[in-house]
Image (tube, rainbow, N blue to C red):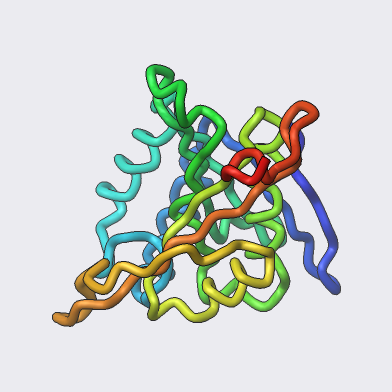
Length: 195
């Protein structure tokens, strides 16, 4: 699938789906991931990881059929990623919904609109594959991510008061959903019991 490319000022922004990673792209992805972890945003790990652990993680992601890995590039350099996780095939009852997870842009690449472009690309791809509801969760401490998701129309439906442990303290987590485009002639409200 071709990447979404947009020029942000004098920078070249791109979001693409990857099915394999070159050694160079994997190095950049690991560096961006560690930068995001150290800054406290968006990956689940709270302490930086060695390159081998991160490389194993991303190589594993590429092997899972129900996961799609998106990478964000700034001027050709991988600076962030996101994953779309579909339910397993035996979960027909929830086949219309997917999870947006591990979405982040490295701190050194923020401020160009790339996070918004990354999330919108995941949404576009999900809708194109028949997904009608996108779910995500985020720590209460990630105010920029919360503002981004709410600005993109995600609806907070709940808060878990003991969602994660970060720096020896318990933090809450917020859960969101977004209805994508109407499904095959039915209104999106029919997906949540409205008709």
